[in-house]
Image 1 (cartoon, helix red, strand yellow):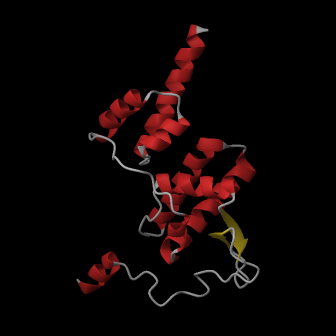
Image 2 (cartoon, rainbow, N blue to C red):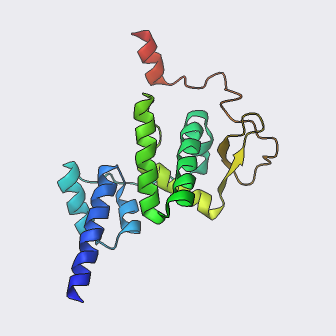
Image 3 (tube, rainbow, N blue to C red):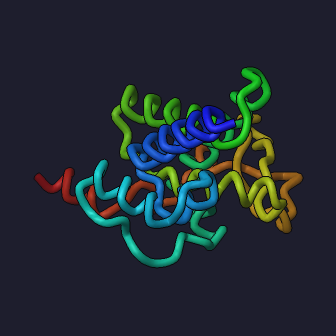
Length: 178
């Protein structure tokens, strides 16, 4: 029995380490591992070299509705759903694998990373709880994140109907200025 608890703890430490390396906040670590808060803080400091950020997790589903976050959230949730459906990987392991694929896609196409691991985790929770859902665009038939309470029978995505200010971030403006 003692060996089993050691293996379990080793797996928990490995999971926490992987989540920390991907940028998870302390609350995400606490909800997905059985390690004590003190142990997680110590592990976070050891890996990141700094204390974990304080404060509440992002909680508003509205963040996922603005143009750029919606495109990245929709990309991520489609990757996540594919992983869940086709690999037999579930739970936090599916989130990690999907987030790694999202990061790889962002790097290959040299895009700005918009979705943090904590936001991705929150997105999955919002979709699982029915606060947000996925609906197809009537034009391109891609699947996009929408509010569950919206009428989305004629949904047109942000790629088919790009808002005039889409992508006009301060960072983009500075890049074009120089």
